[in-house]
Image (cartoon, rainbow, N blue to C red):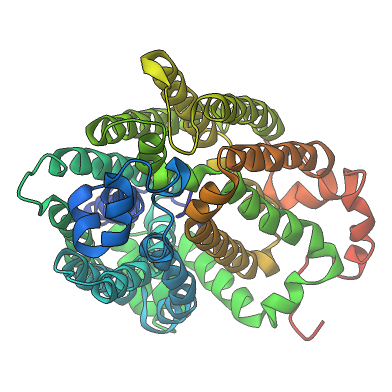
Amino acid sequence: MAGGGFGAASGGGDVEAKITPPAIISFIMTASGGLMIGYDVGISGGVTSMPHFLKELFPVVYKKTQEPGLESNYCKYNNQGLQLFTSSLYLAALISTFFASYTTRALGQKLTMFVAGILSMAGTVFNAAAVNLAMLIIGRILLGCGVGFANQVVLLFHSEIAPTRIRGAPYTLFRLNIAIGILFANLINYGTNKITEGYGWRVSLGLAAIPAGLLTVGSLIVVDTPNCLIERGKLEEGKAVLKRIRGVDNVDPEFLEIVEASRVAKEMKHPFRNLLKRRNRPQLVIAIWMQIFQQFTGINAIMFYAPVLFQTLGFKSDASLYSVVITGCVNVLSTVVSIYFVDRAGRRVLLLEASVQMFLSQMVVAIIMGLKVKDHSNNLGHGLEIIVVVMVCSFVSTFAWSWGPLGWLIPSEMLPLEAHSAGQSVAVCTNMLFTFIIAQAFLSMFCNIKFGIFLFFTFWVFVMATFVVLLIPETKGVPIEEMTERVRKQHWFWKRFMDDFEDDPKGLSRSEA
């Protein structure tokens, strides 16, 4: 799903380091950033299915949903403006990521987090007060900018401030809180849909200000990380902050390691050109295609439009939102499960098992819809409705412990030092771009190819499985510094791209390649 990225590892050497208040605050920052992104992702689907929301802002769609026989069951929600309400957030996040990268380097993480929170709260005001489509889209664009800034900075902040022994926690906590944010949004939508006065959707959209406010207030409390300060030439201040967050006086080994890492990073020239070098193309291809595959599983079509999907199948408004709450609970539990399994099971095993389970889950939904849901009638019955919900939960849970985390983890493990930052940027932008495409196209595709939309996703799941079998090497348990010798040079296909590695074995390009 949308939201993710690679944690940045900084130094080690903190054997005596304690869990200090600044480190604890960094966990809270990660939590609020993840909750904010998750809530913004999860809230739109439920709101787009609320009758009062449609009546006020999308009267054409409202009319189609209220008059049986006026429009095909598959096309009732097909509206470019309605899709833009969801998708505009991700287009804005894509564009703002570039600005966030600059502000993080030039102005620091503290200010970047503050900007993320302010943008999100401004977007919340526009959304909650919207009286026309323009206000609604402006609000979503502002929220998207907040998501782009938060996605860029929060994980980086946490990974740099956390002690080495728990440095793997940031991404885990971030993903878990995105899932919790989605669940909160589902619960809020279920509750506000019962407000008969018609302002429930405004409450749903307005409550996004809570996690955004937490992020904003938190950014005023925290300090920039030692890495960030040292990279901006503030060595003494960086060392002082390092002592505070580690809770010990002897931080020289870690401090020197951060200084050296900063020096090496500054000497690296043309990171994007390095990324395109022949030896880095396998990692680039894998990083890009894993983001595309994430979206073409159909996960965000479910996350964004599950209430619409369930109502198309004949669920009542409350029943559709309740079913989405169940799906959200499964997503949270499965994310917790993934914390245990991802580092214990092989990467390829998880990806292939998930591909089979996702293929079967979506195929069952496609068959049920093809047989029972016609243009102007649906007669699923209670039993088939339960089966559909179970299949959707099966699909969501599988993604949460496979393509969700591994879509980010595998590229992160494989990208070399001189191309890691550039590779991260390319992966994040690819993810946001294809999230936007799916969000903007799904309802139109659903209208035109009907239940075939799930056959479309199953086709891509088959392609994904083939890609894993042929082109994804096993990276479990392989240290980053041994990745080239033990993985890239041993792979039947990718090893042919390693022929220029001997010229620059460390992969550190300090001048024009």
